[in-house]
Image (tube, rainbow, N blue to C red; front, side):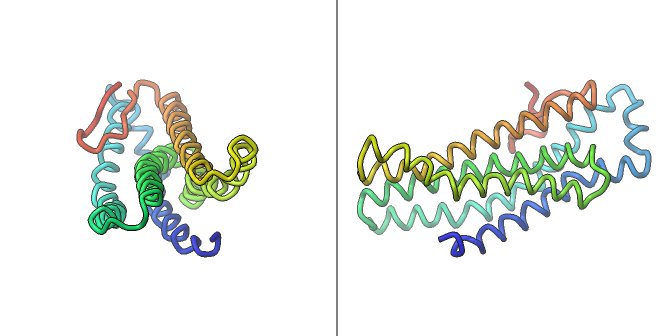
Length: 213
């Protein structure tokens, strides 16, 4: 199964590389040319820097997200329309697909925030991309493939070989990954806003140019 999922992981990693490059390039170029220091001297410099970059990234990710979600939505619609596979499998596939969509959405937010942070702090584009992808894709990949066995060892002695609890052991890693993404977003945001005093938090919301908390 690990080998079977490698093409999907490679495509996801490539997408993360592209988004990490897009998120980090402004700060990297701004530090190289001195434009960042100039912007920081203006009255609204730090706030404007973060809000403008976040707004640009949200516009950038809208259509790619539609492309990523469309196959999942079509698969669920076809499953509902056809009435197959059996009910217990439909429940598992539906929950897994929904968790996958949420993780994709929040994971993309993590890539963007990490790209902004590492773009501000690392020496060059390659270093920013490698660090962003390692955290946003490498760590979740490890969780996805090794934690199910851990959860199964914890759950099976309590529940036996129950079909339902077996699937729960495979859903739990998705929840762990989701919590990890939220932690990464919070960590990168705090570091970025601490480094740029005066910038206000922006939420990962695709409907408004900038949401303030």
